[in-house]
Length: 473
Image (cartoon, rainbow, N blue to C red; front, side, top):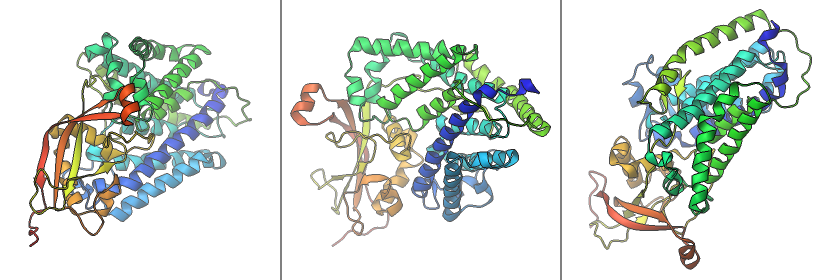
């Protein structure tokens, strides 16, 4: 069926697939390098405890059938290896059916991780990677031209990502309607990047222009994705530019990059497609059947978008086939940070030698400039931002974090930039204090070299030690 394929998008598919494989690779590396401390057998939120309480049907995962840290590591590194092979183009040197199975492997492995990831994996970019990754299974390889229906569904996801985020903003915090949210956002976002300080200090009229441009990109431009070329390509290109602006201004895991990947699939790149055989009937049947299912399941995200009580980042099925997205429906005006400190003293006092733990990404030492980590995702640092908003966000894992620090747990310390205590001499007590952080001014930066100024607010966690540990004589 000639209407089934779109030969003009041959290069678009190639670019999309390689970029998506790159995002998959980062996601699996993030899982492989962090899981033991976060959700391993001795992690803060152990997978074995989770799967004992949640049925397979509610959270399908290989780890529902068997779990060990060694097995999880094997799955994560296998996912990274397959992603690297896809990045290198292995799917184009195997038969069509094998290419589809090859793309199914990282999707199934990452689904298994997300569905037992609990709080650490509760963000929209996890579901977005799975929803996009599932469609990649149907996109084919060099044996066939890209199916039109799959390209349409990729645009449909991109539309929901952008338009849903735009609606969340307009329905949420009034600063989006007043065009003033960027007066605060760069300072209070979860994890600032190396340029965030400079973005914050841009002239306020320019901030108004940025917000207005964001509204246009998210509420008007997405509609143009479904118009003829070259208008659709222009619309997608505008989204790419907007996302790159966000990449420069903060650390948002791979959220911006997976959105860019989606936009690339809508751009009609110049191409000289090779001669390919007609799509086999079984392939057409599979693609059309799955597409029909996804269109049917799209009822829920559409109903959510038009609802006055729109919610952000929710999956409507345990396989994460269709989801709703959105970010920053409200913007904090003040930045708080939880600072964790330890001491060797048997009896902790205010004048004890309290030493601060340094995190890799979240603000700590006011003189330490933020670094760029995205698309790599520092999961503990990201959750520490929520912990500062309210202790309720950290209720399930913060106590375990403190316990691991009191033990000098090696895997937990790997998540940090630096521990103030040697490996063989853990602290006797840990405390946490809440500080208010603000960006310094240009003059303060010149005088002190510090990009942050912080002020003590209150005690977050009183001095705590391991139960049953005797005092030293």
